[in-house]
Amino acid sequence: MAKSSEPPNYPQPPILKRNGFQFRKGVLSVDSIDRVDGSRLNELFNPTTLRLKRDQKDAAEKACQLFKKPFFAAQLRYYDIPFKSSASKTELQLLLQDAVRQGKCNHVPNSVTELEASMRADYEPLQQDERAAFDLHRFVDMYFLTNGEPDKTKTTEVLALQRSPYSEWEVHDMARKIPGLHTRNGGFSSNSHVCIGWDDGEVSKLAKSITDRENEAMEAKKEAIWEEQLERHRKYVAKVQPEGTSKGANKDSEVFNLDRCLGSYVIRCDAISDGWLNILDGRTLTMDISRGNGNMLRAAYDFGILEGTMLLSLSEDPLKAIVGEDSTGSEASDEEEDEDEEEDEEDDADPKDSTNGRKRKAGEASLEQDAGSAVDAKRQKTNPPPSGSHRVYFLLHGRETGEGEVLHFPDSGHIDFLSNGCISFAGLVYDLSHVGPNVEFRGYKVSDRPRVEPEPWSTFLYGRYGLEWN
Image (cartoon, rainbow, N blue to C red; front, side):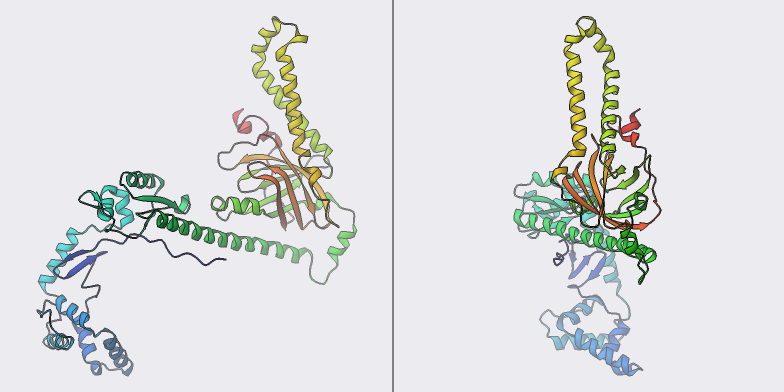
């Protein structure tokens, strides 16, 4: 896996400067150097006053690290002790050491506390993402404009803002009004960023790095979750086929029993999980097979972007018959809706010569042909069953999980169980709606008991949203 990209370049909070002090993110400082209280300064100047040798050593090492000209100047400013800007490091050190000895650093003087209070009152304590959300004009003016005109020298790097979709639109719209300013979206809807800057190439580069980093994180999450599911399968196999037994070998020598397919399976389908990585967000694909009518089985499937019911059979013929019945029923429903209009036309024309009648028959033939192709599509191009496997054919119907729209026609395919024990299988959907042709998937059994009851097949037969419209 590629190395993760660097974190996004979030805009830094503004710095308020006054009398040699800076106020940033609610903290007062001098040249980014924090104030050290008087007692600690005394320990740094006099490490031997500490009782423990370890503490003496730590204080001496810290003093060696801190004792530089900017440090002495900052502490003198914190305690409002005047000094010449031309003073040397040694002069500043002696001045501060003397002030500590006299107790001038035991308290922060009122002049400094009052200055801090004044700067805090004048400072907007909002982070820049928040500033962009609440006042885009102020945000843009702070980073990209001077006196209302574009200023490319004010912020030279690309900034990344993480906001809600509505605020993203506002940022894009605001940027379009400023000549030379560019924006791009990075990441996905759940964690989207707007990248903004003067260099379009750099803006695109940062947006892509954010998207790539999120892709890497989601891919890692997907693999970790899949490993957990595969561990469930391993535990199941260890339970039904203990090490050292020949149970599995005996099963392979028996006649294939369709009932052994019953149970709960976790599904791996790279065509779906890779194509809809950000939408699935670690969702586990499943298939739960139950007994059906006659010599068929039923299954509840959850393929992430699709969910619904499967019908499984050792032969394709019963499935073709079901598809024919479904298409006839659908046409009957359409005929009922148009019955009144057709009666008027039939009164004025010979039924044998009725144009509408001919159109309906053609429509029925077309539907039956389309539905039949759901079983036959690309079947002649599929490979024969692997040696030692057992092929089961299926029809699947259902809905897409986003809007809940029902599939126009059932999709067909086959499953090759890789042993009589049916502990795993390799499946193929000849043409999966919303995905494409020849979609491969694999199943790994985790339980002999199905965990989900399939919805009735008739649920998906009528109307765009199935029986919910009836």
